[in-house]
Image 1 (cartoon, rainbow, N blue to C red):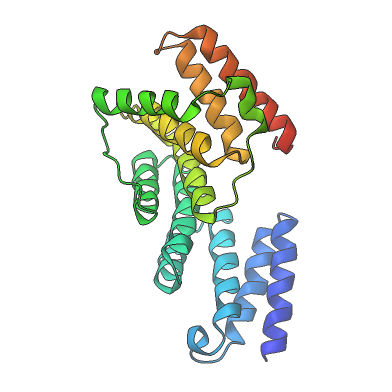
Image 2 (image 1 turned 180 degrees about the vertical axis):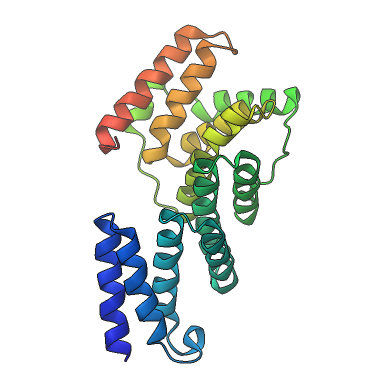
Length: 239
């Protein structure tokens, strides 16, 4: 029975990758029926993989309440705060695409808190100014153009934090949540300056360039950061 469950799980994965989400759900439901009575205790790795796939396919087939329930199941069975943060990054993105901007923001803030990054829902001007000062300090003696050659991020927690910040950008921008968007961008810039580049750094520097050319009124510097974002995007081949 376990072998058949694994075969149906693999078929479900292939169907999802081919965007055949309804067929994928059928395979996954068959796989679930073949599992033992307490799969989380008896076969946790297989159950985890099945739960992740089922959550995604429930979302892709419009079963949003079911998808939400599976997120809660995954959060309950996650083995670390890093895993929980990664799951919450998925929830952040899914809520944003559903237009649930405030819920998306809350999910991201919760995930970042699990990684030790606490920040307010409505940042004040002085908090934004402090992040701007940190940008200058973290850049140090480097030229802005040199950031393209920064080492790649290897720390899993930093990668997850960058993903969470990236996922929340759209929700923060579209929700009109006061000064949250510039604050988040500055947070992400400082993470990249301290830890190096990852695919999310490309958009982060481009977004910072946009802010500098706009409300921060430093267009010359903004242009340089925008160029860095494009160069990192090309180097990492992250379209």
